[in-house]
Length: 114
Length: 115
Image (cartoon, each protein chain N blue to C red):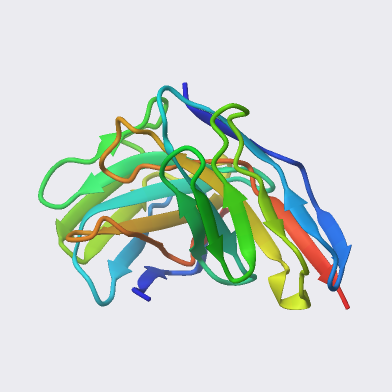
């Protein structure tokens, strides 16, 4: 079945460091791909998304490119801030599902130190 | 953005009792809501899809008689954990799908601890 695999955390970085959180997926066809963020004490929020191959999603300085050839959707940010500390989830929505059902990776905790 | 509210945010109960968790879309209508379960340091696992006015669709391996879902209105879905046991202790998260746009918004989650 469809699945999402993320790099294990926690990821600890200093402020202004470069961030990469790896995400790979297994799916039939071409799913839509998402990154969600969960700040402490809050619900999940959509960070960015891409719906077809080679699309790049971007928001708040974060970027991820839908790579069909490597079945990846790695999250990157050029310069992280302390306020980026959160748990990041990679997710996919199967092309066969038009209800919005999502399959999540296990989440990666990011800790940014001043 | 749109707001989804879950209540209670945390609950402690005795083994054998039932607990109800509410998921409300505060400023939009949601024909479809989803219930997830999250174990510590693990992914969100979809439990069921809740459709307004009809029976919920459960994922494989999820006991429908144990996790009762009711979606009686376009803004409210409830998850009732019946005869709760310690292994039901978990973080339960709902999401709601905006009826006219398909966007998804998540609640803050409800932490259940069964003693």
